[in-house]
Image (cartoon, rainbow, N blue to C red):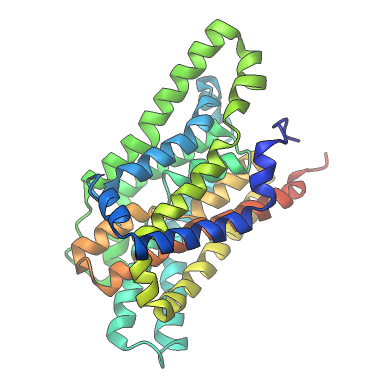
Length: 350
């Protein structure tokens, strides 16, 4: 059971589906009728990373980083099975199932609706998503399922290291593209913004509050002052995402729907695969839920950047990665709810 207060956060979580739909709608309306808003926000970028989005994500994951105890990070090595599940699913399974689902739907099932050239480009975008497991938003999903913050940090950190080595060969192998160039500036800026800065901020906050008020105050009172921030930040993130993609959504609704089907199916399959593996080897829920989330979600900033670099800003491949952005938050929120409702699966008998 969580000792989180049941005041403000319950108001948002009780009607979360309605809030999500409302923010998606508001975002589209803002993007269509007040296009200067997303255009202005787009000017604030570093290495393809939106600074307003980075600020929102930082605000969302900062409360989790306050919970990170470096003593707990050192103890992760005593139970590495969750890391093995993360590595196995993210790098030996996920890219290939994404390729399989995308090819099945876009080239076979939907062949009467999508030309072969478009299908190949959409497939490329899907593969770029599948080969880039999530970095930043995993901290948000882990917070919402009350994951182990120290373990999640290690899962994300090791994934970031593997991306440096594995992303390019996997994309080249699956797509037969020889000129894949990873925008390392995007990768390093993302890691710095979404992992290093909030982690340092959280650790400094933890040390300061503990020193002046004590650990009990930190864990029972101070941390819960931020209980509403994650949900509110998610909703504002939706508004920004959908406002920036409003015209894409309005002009390509049919193809966006077709592309979304294999992406959503892939997300559910990978989540339940990782989640189920954790259950099979009797990992605790606080490790299993984030392991499922990190496999299911995507590093869409990197995917979009590579799609634009390889195929162009207006390419179908870039559109496919954009659909990944659009489906990410609503689908992952659904998986958060599923995880929280199935926490009892991870109560093991002696």
